[in-house]
Image (cartoon, rainbow, N blue to C red):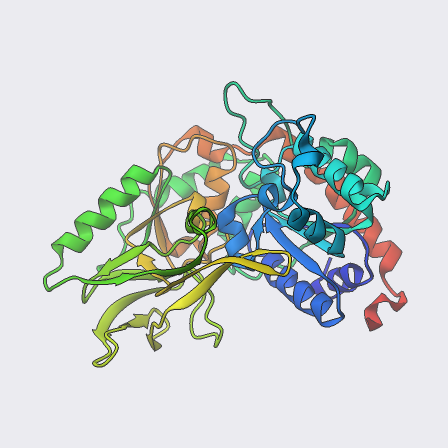
Length: 424
């Protein structure tokens, strides 16, 4: 399905799942839809399953927004304890966005459905709200921890079966422009990895990147922190630090902080490899753009970064907000940078990297290899330390679901193509 038809279906008020491979522009389309829906006077609540994904869209986690928190079930006194503020937000919402839907358990979608029906006193699915879910089931799955209720993808929930959302499967690739890498990623998505694909990846373990700094992706936090601290220490010159400023109560600020990729105290030096962690409002850089600190502004001391495209930008503080419907709960102001010698695979979701050196020897969950390998545009800018068998695996459930979703998307195209939706 193309972006134009998908947007028209969303603007028609239909509940839907927006899906597609990494790099097909899901977040771009969501942002476009949110802006247009709000322009039409709709109250849009923007949420995601992780705080990190929520900040990309300027929203809140679905667990916090709905009031369910991290519970596995709704306690008996749940509705008596639900605050008036939470009830008001739910009652006034016309459109609910849930991004990174692949990470939400089926039973939690059922919990959200029950909360919305009860609060809104409306027994339609999700209390009559237009629900727009976005994500890719081949990326990171729901996490099942010991001593917690286990669950699967949201498509197995009762609420999904009753809602029967339209499926909008985006197919045009905006990130990868390299046939060989696309073939490998497609093989991963279809569970059909052949010897030639593995050999092509293993060949990238024998090629060293050209001189100069390159971002590394690792599967565990401790490796990332060690590399960034060590590389910064190796640079000559004095450190410059930038402390974030915040508004809102402590608990909301802490909640938001977990989702903001810029550190509380950003420490850099001249020559540091850095990454932009937010899209520039003026489109001067994007979330994931890599550059080097080349100067500091004389009066403000803000860092001047030369990005890989040659553009020099003075990096001024930007603002992240935690919103609850229309209400602002907390904000963080910080220079939108982090050290970029290394980053975790998990935090790289949604980013496009010009080049990366990736360590998949410790990959520990299905989909992790797919997320990491799909961050770059072509195989020539992909370098590997190594790769384990788990990195080449995707969820068997995701494979089965994908066939169903592709078929449902084709049905959506047939149903809506050539109708008045195009003129919306």
